[in-house]
Image (cartoon, rainbow, N blue to C red; front, side, top):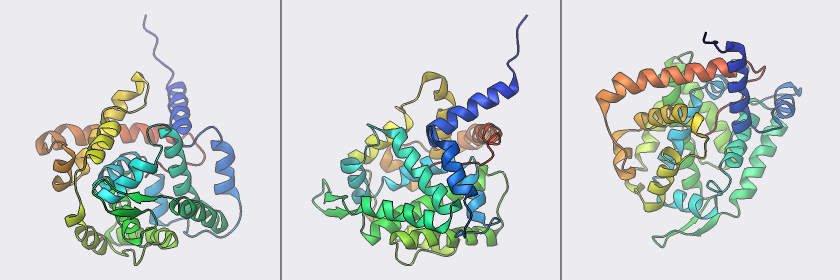
Amino acid sequence: MAISPDPSAVRGWLAAEVRQRVVGSDAPTRAVELFETPGPRWFADDAPIRRVHADASMFIGGLRALLLQSLHPLAMAGVAEHSDYRADPWGRLQRTADFLAATTYGPIDEAERAIERVRRVHAHVCGVAPDGREYSAGDPHLLRWVHLAEIDSFLAAHDRYGAEQLTDAERDRYVAEAGVIARALGVPAPPETVRAMHDQLRSYRHELRGTPAAREAARYLLVQPPLPLAARPAYGLIAASAVALLPRWARGPLRLPFLPVTEALALRPAGKAVTRTLRWAMATDRHEQPAPG
């Protein structure tokens, strides 16, 4: 007679796996530091940014953001030449998740420390791209591009896969709230509405290219993730859902397919299923950590 697995055991195992990958071994201690330390925060408990960044749709949104960001040759050059995303992908993921958690949920002094850490790292990321142009991670123009790609991706994923849909006014609030963090990082005049976000994104279109480094990063993220075989089917659904959220103009340069019928009939239900499963597992934690961006 077949023995059915205990749902609570499966849930606990999945939650532990996600927590280990995204937050790291010190997750409980870090959660207390960010969520239970008294003091003022940048955002109120009911702020849209808290809802978006805590939702399982961020796994899809974060991957979409990385793919979209790679299309800027100077931003991609900085990642290719200075990032350890291949040698230490989980460490990079955990640092990104910690930054999102600190700035979204932590006390203001903790958020400011997280901002300062990133700015110190950016000060040392500079060089010459393969096309001969100089780049710097502290360049306000590049900072804005990275910010726009992130919030557009996080919001797009939440719109399609989030547990609770935002109203139009809440979507604008999300963009404005994310701008608080962006401004602290050095982004000039970040958008405060969805419409302004889309307008600013369009202004970068002529700068975007599918460079060899961008296509290599896309292959690594989508085809060669550093995951055990058992985790790859679920990750494959997340990856396919992230690609399906990209606009058509962003896919060609990365040599990614555009299959609208397949995406609507198969990928969208699959994406909803995988985010529901992750949400179910993450609900075992007292404090839900945001997924990476």
